[in-house]
Length: 192
Image 1: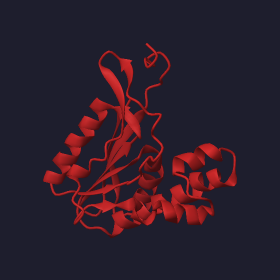
Image 2 (image 1 turned 120 degrees about the vertical axis):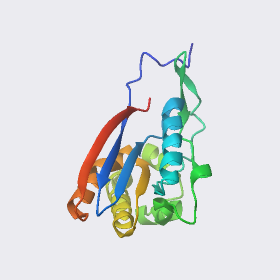
Image 3 (image 1 turned 120 degrees about the horizontal axis):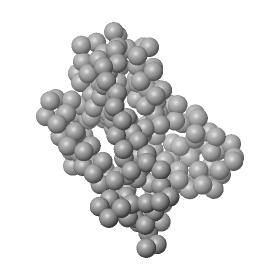
């Protein structure tokens, strides 16, 4: 079976971290661009649960523009990898916040001084170049600080859907800069 990769894939874990900060909760659900349907269904249920409890959703609005090579592939007989769903059916644009709104493709291309490839193309084409290094450090760091800025100025409980790679830096900064911020719980989920 050519699409069976069950013997070659390493399980990928994401973390769900809950922090209390200034009489509210901030829940950070780490995300991956590709995962199991079961993982994304769990995230979908969490979004619905937290929205019912009055949480605002902060989300990373990354879109993979070059996903033509991504096809569902079998991990086991009961598990298939899928592309991350948008979850937009659960987002209320009047209250929830797309943290990436400040990081449109045009903004990123301008800052990196490069032609309009998708971010995935840029990272692939320029694997060892300064452009890739720029995206890996500067832009990601700016996004983390933008998320932190929005979280600190926002009132009420927040449920964050953001890439797993952003979580450690964000939680560290939140615990340092947040008012009376305390780590309540951190748990791993296998996304693949």
